[in-house]
Amino acid sequence: MTKTTRAVSSRMSQGVEEDSQHIRPARENIIARSSLYIHTSPVVATGHQLCEIEGKNKMEKLSKTGRYEFLAEPFHCDFSNHLFMGHLGNHLLNAADFHSNERGYGMNYLNTVNKTWVLSRLAIDMKDMPQAYDRFFVETWVDDVMRFFTSRNFKITGDTGHVYGYGKSIWAMIDVRTRQPVDITAVRGGLINEYIDRENPCPIAKSSRVKLSFNAKPIRIIDTCYNDVDINGHINSVKYIEHVLDLWNLDWYQQHTVRRFEIAYVAESHQGDRLCFYREQGDTEVDFNIRITKECTRGEEIEVCRCRVLFS
Image 1 (tube, rainbow, N blue to C red):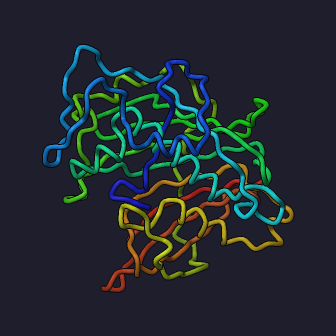
Image 2 (tube, helix red, strand yellow):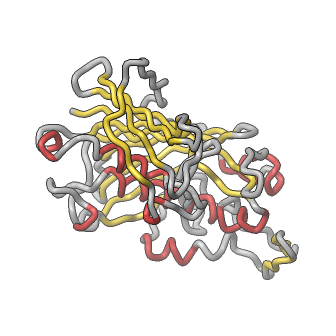
């Protein structure tokens, strides 16, 4: 997905138990998306709003952190038998979707009021990657909320507690009709504020400011097609990651591994747009900055996003 502030699909977490360590398999998480909270009385939809019938018992409050189980499926792994970075990105976004839906401020509710989450920035910092058939967990939590942006963290662990890596992200909420940002704190009476966890730090660095010189030259131009488009109707956030990582050939990946990937979304692109990729080496021979633009009918280019890829 991409932007108006930047896009994606959004997707999120955990069971009704208050114990933040409770684990529910991903299969059950999908089922859980149909229910935002546990109620003693039913939820009814009136027009574009969900009206909750008040009862003696209030909604059970979930833990601030969600934990979701995933499987590194073999056909989601590369030639080295490790999970593709793009598929890991999808798992992070799915965990975010599960987490927010279960707590009442996710896509299930937002779609009824013509709003949606879009991804603005994402940084993934990995020590290593799950291998084929490995079961792993994604923990996710929100650590800050501002009027137009919220920050969400991720932790990726194995079933023995091994930490594969972490992620940091920034999200915006937009009106799907105007494509303009909306006040996050005004949605459902600021419900998201009840789930901010500032006591659980994420140890990786924030996304850097990616800079390219005017000497950067385009190294690839691609057309966008059906498989690039997501639920928000624009090019999927993770598709940009996959296209960027395709800028290096198999020989490179036989000698190098992606350790950190950063992406900042600037503008949306849509099916039929032609994307131009500019690449420039950073401070070291394994550090690269990338700019992606889309061609306009007037022959101009509009910047869509910027990325940084650090290899080891």
